[in-house]
Structures are given as structure tokens and as C-alpha cells.
Image (cartoon, rainbow, N blue to C red):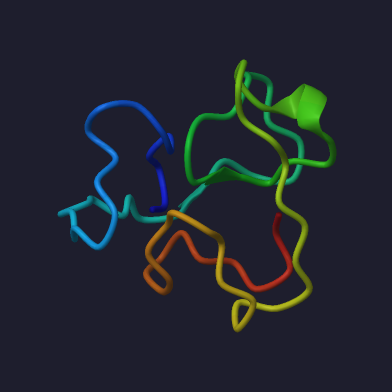
Length: 79
């Protein structure tokens, strides 16, 4: 499940769960703060807050796991 950790007593086989998919947020080519969930443009994992990784993509057709596609923050060549 995007944005959720697997395992534990709440992880029941064949159950479905409601989730929230945050919209993408464009913080520019060289952000000066650590980026949060669905924020870009990162160049490496070091650009992201603790526990997050930089997801690299070439176009907005490449969907970012756990984030909603489209909208004003969905810049095609940003990671």
C-alpha cells in the first residue's frame, strides 16, 4: 500500500485499506530545505527528509509511488 508499512497485526491478507495520495509539490530545481512526501525536485536521497528516498523519473507519465499524478506541482522532468 503506498505510504503504509507492511506487517504487524493490522496487515491482514486480502483486506483492502483506504489511503491518501498527496498531490505533487514543486519546490524548484534547487530547494533549500529537506523535501517531504511528494515534494520535488530532488537529486539524491540526501535532498529528502529522513526515511524518504528520491524517486527519479523522466516524464510525468512515470507515476511517483504514493503520490497523485497531475496538478500544478507535477513538473514532467522533476524527481
